[in-house]
Image (cartoon, rainbow, N blue to C red; front, side, top):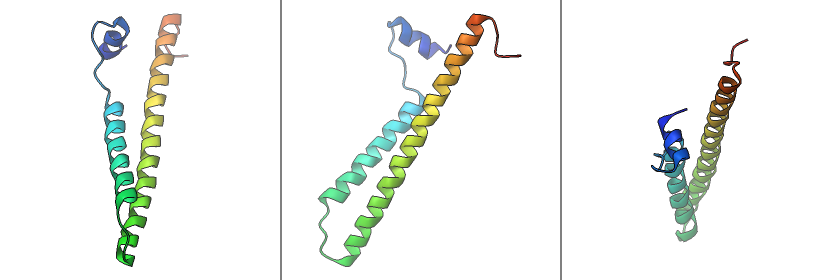
Length: 95
């Protein structure tokens, strides 16, 4: 188990954010900014409408990337749990 996970379990030191949490936070900021631009922009000509459509596409892309990063994080956490359980049961993960 990692030092960060051990520190978080003990409760004496707050665990440092993982790379996944940092990526998700960055993506969340980008999503918020994209949504703000879509909702607050004024559309008075076709060029601005094209820009808004591009923002919607960017928002969809960001949401998909965020989902993928969250899935990767969850899979990594599950793999660590399985490894820990196998080590505790004496199997060691090898057959």
